[in-house]
Length: 71
Image 1: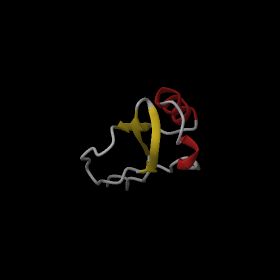
Image 2 (image 1 turned 30 degrees about the horizontal axis):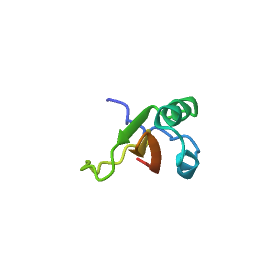
Image 3 (image 1 turned 90 degrees about the vertical axis):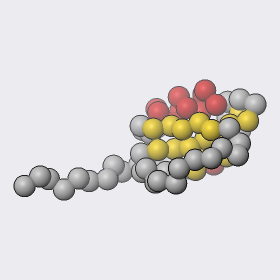
């Protein structure tokens, strides 16, 4: 019988700590803090709604993170 898959445990991190950072630096910081997936999007992007525990999302305008959320 195959093992039951387990969901990855996301890093304990505060999304608001990325707002105002330069996008490239925010992505590097997110990886350093343990995020395996970092998604960078322009404002108003149409995105899928699936929740991925190992993903952090950045909305970036003019090279700066303006919004951040998990999943």
